[in-house]
Length: 534
Image 1 (cartoon, rainbow, N blue to C red):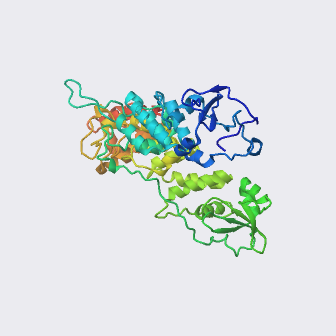
Image 2 (cartoon, one colour):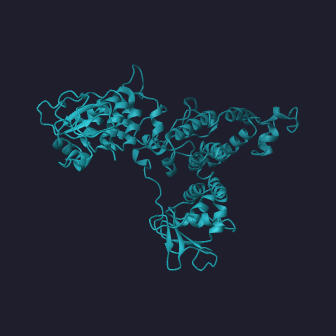
């Protein structure tokens, strides 16, 4: 219940009365809202009903004695309804729907409270008035904060407006070749921590001079792959009906029934063991009796594909295979398995799901980074971030919906720091689809839709990944023997200098000049950490 009744019953007068027009100047008010600080607002049921779907559903109160409905009343019989908002916020909410002057919103904190109240009491007019004030705050330099607030309250148009204002360019300075952006693209505020990484990604999808997208339409804004809704109908062996050792049925959300042995499953999962020991009850939606045989039935919120793999890992069986399908990728299934394995504390399944996710490190490092962050795999986080440095372009991935924007921000900062170190050695380096080559002196962009490497230089991507891993593994100490792990001996040496490159005393002097410079980069790369990137 959003509103609560007064604790005391009977007739009482408010301690404090709100200013006009909420002080009942004409004596025609028929209901009172009492703010959390005790200030009373004398209102009209008809106005509240027209402006608020919430109040339309609960007003008017029945004209029964106070003791019958449990609501305190004034000495004149007006019902008093206590609310959780302060008198300052309630004053603004009501002025937006009454013919009265509306105070100016000057802080984002007030805007958030008012939007929360507008949603709570279902007052669309209030939300519209607040958005007008938010536009003014955008022009006052609070574009990022307004964007975060708009995402929180699902105000799509307001979010696009805030992003557009933030990414706008200012007038050209005297002698300047072109107008410069008003804000730096890597600006960030604490308010962004309240929204998911997906919203931060969409922020950059606006047509902006900061990003190198050719058009806003190039940005994939979908909400992720859809899950399979319909199961296969029958569980595979040994979970089919014909199993002789089954004494419990587990039913998935898509209707597939798994006949399992409670002892075997309970040993693998302490959480499941407690569920299986729970006595079935007709009033419990999770457990009950199944068919005439009186078999114990448990309904679980996981789909059949996830339960098939999870239960297989509870049994003394070889590791199963996570199958790939067109509508549901292998990594998505591994992630859902990890969620279920963590929920039911199946340690073997947790280890298996982690291995399955790590297998996608080379092909989908950004997705693995978000998954590893979500589940606290610190060893995988560092490796996935390192791989993502050398990925081409930006892509929406469904895991962005599951982690806060701060996680994506940390990856972008780390990637930019690493690219700034290696950028001068890419040949060539392209940013954007207009074909322009990046000037190494200008540094790597914070966010780039089309990517750092041209498709024809895929070999360079593989080299820099291997070099970066080697540099971190050796703490930046890369001598001649170490470099032979990734570069052939004949390419390492400078044949024009003479001498023995394998010698421990003279070898480094005969390292190819270009590779000598790259070795120095290893020391710099080894110092950059995803944990310390902010």
